Image 1 (cartoon, rainbow, N blue to C red):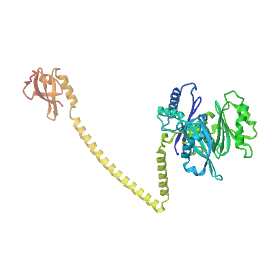
Image 2: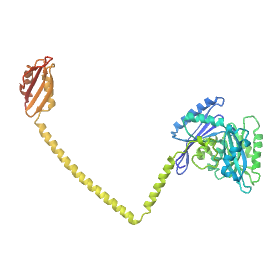
Image 3: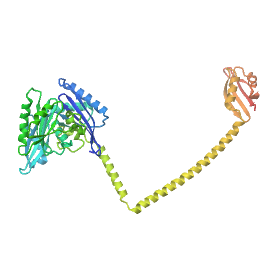
Image 4: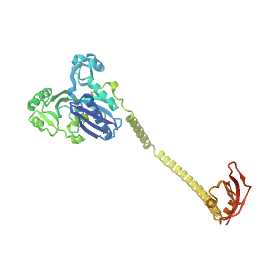
Length: 459
């Protein structure tokens, strides 16, 4: 899980929350988090479109590539059952539950997905206590539609209750607690649960919007918790996770003497608000071993884990082994390595000295050639000056087809309407002398006069 990242997306009644976490050598850090509102009265298709837009925006804003996405759904969308099984079925537990699933929930097996986890092994009774989480297929199918719209692979789908337990197992204020009750309150409901040995034993959600007296509701819902911890001595450690805007809940709970309240400071791990806690707990699944490992997404639909982190770890381990072997060599070996290094460096320097000598020789040769060319240049008229002078002197109806220049002089070959006057025009130039026709003037098929004229240059 080294250098991995996890994106937790928690869907609730009024929208969704996202937490993006990264793991390094030392710790897990929050690389991004956000909360978005989706009105509950919108249709499913419109909700999915909005959710897809929000998720894409979050991924682009935080520059997330190939994320491991774990989605969370509210507790009220699933059925939780705590069932005891003989210890003998441990090896084939899932197949046993799948065969008898209709005995545990009032739904047909073709209409559901489920997952299970052993939460206790009662060895004295030779029994297993198993938490079974069941969800309707249509719920998961809606998220598979979202998956196709996003073009992302899903690692899994969990529930808010198990995400809360995973969050509390990581938070520094609560990580050492193995047995506790928790009360998590968001904008519309109160989650109540009991945890033993870091395993979720009891979970319930209560709607706080129905107008009932909160004092009475809380008293009623805390009774199962009190009964669950009845055999324990002392007050029940109770983790309270709620927003500061609702202090009435804390006031009611403070009056309960048999509950020891623990309020984790969310800012210690950069959690913006209590609404972000489930998303944080979902993202943790991809970065560390968590106590609750419920995944409602069928195995065949899950994104396969990337091999990049594995190969990176393999490379790092190989480098560490090589490093240890290097340091574990004998003193003689280290001296030989140093001597070899000195010899190689000496040979390299000798080669560079030879290369410098060759460069000096090439440089001298170039200087000699430049000096020779400068000597030639001092006694000659530039070719461009000759061409310029010829162009100025000849008429516009004359054009030159060939031009040659050597130590004997200059010769031009071309066509003109009247070639006889070219001699006079070129003789007027102060650069030219001894202007003569080198061949007789002839006509081409178009009537043009073909000429060849030679001349010399004045010094």
